[in-house]
Image 1: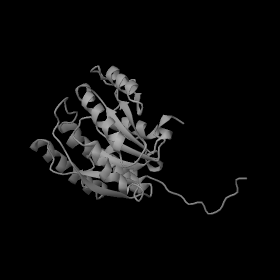
Image 2: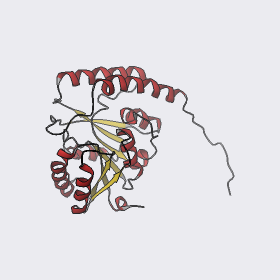
Image 3: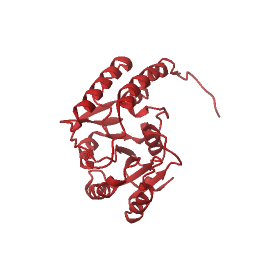
Length: 244
């Protein structure tokens, strides 16, 4: 058991080289925790091996905010690993996910949380996206390709604003690219998901970690790998037992 067990809602924030965004992120998250629709709430940062000096700043932020906690990787392992580590170390009933780039609003968790008791996952759909044309086009093509290969119905798996029931989140497999297939993975676990429109903002600090290779070719490669995983997934039903 860790400190997150004392809360009802834990916001997991994967962080990799976002030092310039951390001061504003601290302000926004601290302000949101005071008024979140689910109380009490806390923040769990997962430092994915940052190399920009942000790790020390993140420790300072967590020292001065009572409900802020962190994990730090020894080396960069990628978004899926950081997100899975957050889920694995979350002991509150609900786990949220938001990126550190300030392109989504913590306040929009309040659009998702009212539905979290009825659905295993509630996920945002970015409306009026503020990314550049090239980034949006690649995202559209990647989403379309993923849906055809994996056969899910999610419109925007890349939206970094989600709320999951922790009992489902902790069962997710630790797969490279896992974050792209959360709707399908949740369905495989017997849960369902709801999609809710949320706000989106342009990046104002730091540098995007996504480019053509990992926003288009990476998702397509992972989609074929995930389809392989789906086809080999086993299920069984116990008909009778004696274990005592």
